Length: 344
Image (cartoon, rainbow, N blue to C red; front, top):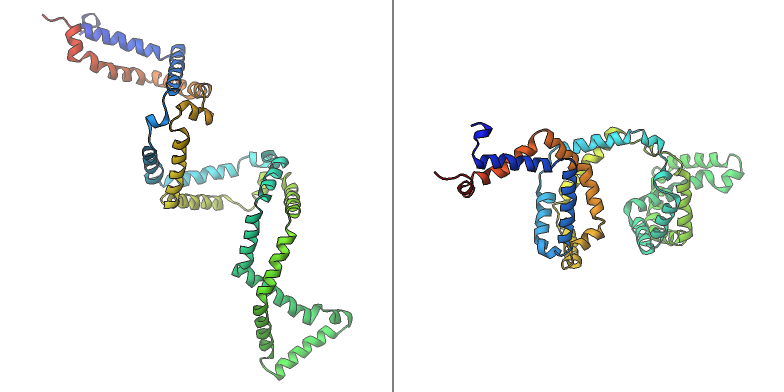
């Protein structure tokens, strides 16, 4: 059937498709999107969060999208590659640490950290109580006593030859009484074991007094001043591409496990519950405004992404095909045919 012989329904369909496609181009498209964004925001001013969602629906989305969604194995590989590109980028050598975090900002972090005095004291106590630290102290004290007895005490330093004589006497005593050296070592370590709790306690008391706010502040800021002029590349020395990718993979595997824990679910529920307590009965525009989403922000992204993408789809013929699919069903319907196609 030629265009001239198209039935009225088909002619109207073609005109309608042409009209809709033309309205989704250039200035008309921009005007349409701006108007619709404005209309949607106006409606959002009278619709509350409770009207469009519930806590369980939001948690269901989190469960499906965050917890249950199977992520392809290529994701950690791609993330590792991207991390390596960032690590090797020219900007790493051109950027100093102080260009990212200023000294005032670093000072602010230190001041906030100093407010956590109770946590600092608890960390010191836990470190002191750790078996590895206690073993370290025991070995240091033991080696210090042994070195002092045979090498570094006042007599051996002041009187030439005394140190050698003491070592010689030690060797001769061990020959005369086999096991004497082991007995001495065992008794010394036994004494250290009995004395260690007191040593650790005094060490902790000393550190708690020594690590005053002023000392911590001065130490951290001195360390900061020493590195703030170094480039990010310098600070990354020793972290190669392979090591970085391994960290990315480990982090990815940790996330896959963490997202399925009861702890993650509990945290998510707490956040969602608070969201509905605060915004459930308030207009959606309050929530959007508090997170910085305004009409200008939305339109900026619409112009950056929506307009060019729709333009590309226009060129590819997708928009016309979409409009035709949407309208054809109506113009071919019995109701439309009854009105548009005259009966004989």
